[in-house]
Length: 537
Image (cartoon, helix red, strand yellow):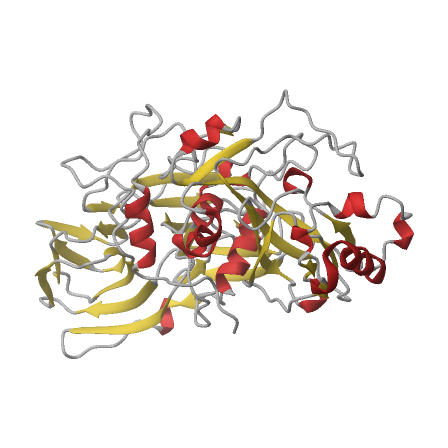
């Protein structure tokens, strides 16, 4: 259910193209949708029916407001398809229940006709459930039956492409959001309907070919059938801040601020990028330190798929949260130096420095992304919480070194995110070692020795998985810092480490181009740690 909620928020950020000639192309433009549609979590259910050679011809988001109906219909593109020709996969994302689920006429895909053709002699206001069921029984015999499966956020319904179906959201509140993925055997021709002719007889525009994606097998079979096959979206997108920037493999990195952070001339937001790149675990990891003068915002309310961790260094700020970017009444939470907050993927947010503040707000932001962990619902997944105060979390120590757990758990991107606060007295620390996960450290007080250097607070450090690092406090006063552990299996899409310098976003050159890994390797990677899609709670 946590993954369903995140995907529901994610699709709000997409251009759904409702007025386009072909609005079922989300997977051609969005990697999250493609990763899910092409994963073994779905293929294992449709390959026994469609065979090894499969195309994804439709990927779209369908919404229904309370009381809004989608009348009985057959999908025009596959109206004459049976269960060995085309399969549709419907996944509830938000406000899903039996009251907002789909309804089907069982066995109707074997009738050989669409519901639009069968009901062409009935006025639209006469096409009730009972009337449609009687039409189906006249075509299919006694096997025809009406069913409305129970569903929930994260539930997956599968049905043959030619099935008669419809929906009526009878919930009293809540717009139902669902993701529709439509598959066909590669040799089945998908034609562009004339959307001005939704009733029987259907009409098609064969001068336009919808874009199809090959999710399994040989794409040449689809081409020979007259289909247009396109490439999937990039496996590892460039920086989500600036698509003109190529991301490098990030080595161990240390950055401290001396002199203090700069203030934007004339006021406003002044960000300083500390580092940005990728590791073998994270498709993107970056950190920036920013100043924000009183009365200013860095940006409007925004949604993105990255996860973030914000830590206040000085001054005060207000964290603004909303349900969507157009929310007229976002929630505001006041934070001060030493407070920090975690932003799950697709949190609608921004930050401001209060107009009455006497000094600029200064803060550090970690921002990261990784291959989404499609899998069973995890009730303990981390969600947005009230900001924490490090003033209350740093442990006292009389034995040289002490740590205090802040929070840990799975997230949308990570099987496990772990945060703890540590206090280290002069001369104490830990020896050099290698971790199986990436580690970020924010030094807030004192001076430490690491990687052969003395580092003064405030500072930010990043240690990729498999790189040796140790730490020793060398200042008279204790060193205090926050540790962020990013746990995730190695990503097979990412290139291996190489000798390189830290990525300071300089120079700006070339979009990162790379080839997609083999289907077998991707499936094996997904199968190794997830076997089913969001089971019922």
